[in-house]
Image (cartoon, rainbow, N blue to C red; front, side):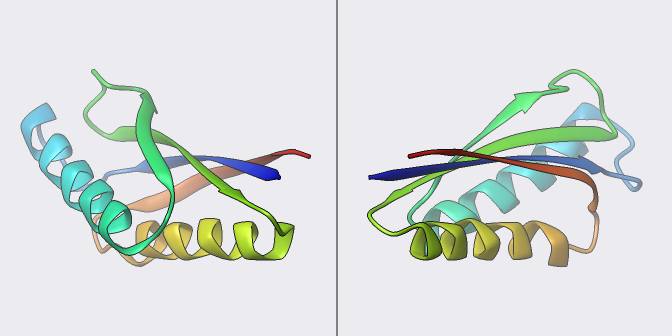
Amino acid sequence: MIIGMMTVEAILYEARSLKEKRSTLKSVITRIRQRYNVSITESNHQNVWQRAEWTIVAVGSIRIQTEKELQRALAIIDNHENLEISNVSWEWLL
């Protein structure tokens, strides 16, 4: 079993309040959960309105398959018009 974990930090330039930030993050999280077999949570910066950090985890039997799921989730975040990814870090448990 392979466990892949990705931490994604992003900047929300358009957010003017925590309410706007949470609305944007909720739409991203919902889209990822509906489309891909990953677990995602906001893991840091909950009270900062222009920064976000997610931890995304995928489990699979083959590393390539697990990495593809995480890459697809990252693509949704990267393609969102109100977000700019500032840092991505990967960890693997074999």
